[in-house]
Length: 112
Image (cartoon, rainbow, N blue to C red; front, side, top):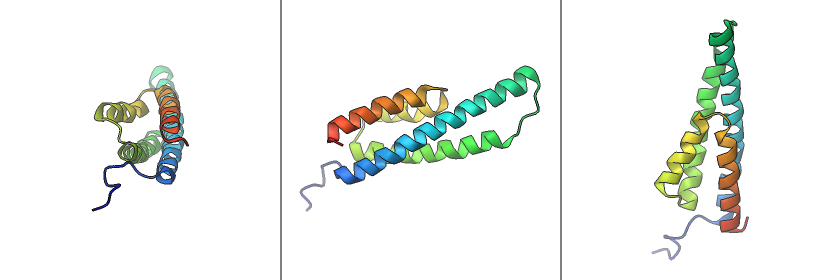
């Protein structure tokens, strides 16, 4: 039996998972802002906007869900923090703040 079976993932794996999470949190946040502006322009001002913005945001958010879940498993976040972080990608600007807090916590906890 592996003596490290109950230990979190190694620092290198956590660092790479954290980097993926940080990149996707920012990309998701930026696409969400673009989607928000697109919706305001479309429904608030009747501007004809491209429909692919929502599709791209959806796929980027899906990737964000995957990398966030990967990081959460590696650093053993409780379910509440994991779900809160997953939801942060659906509220404009929130992903930036949550990413900053999570990145600092993980860096401090694992000396990255």
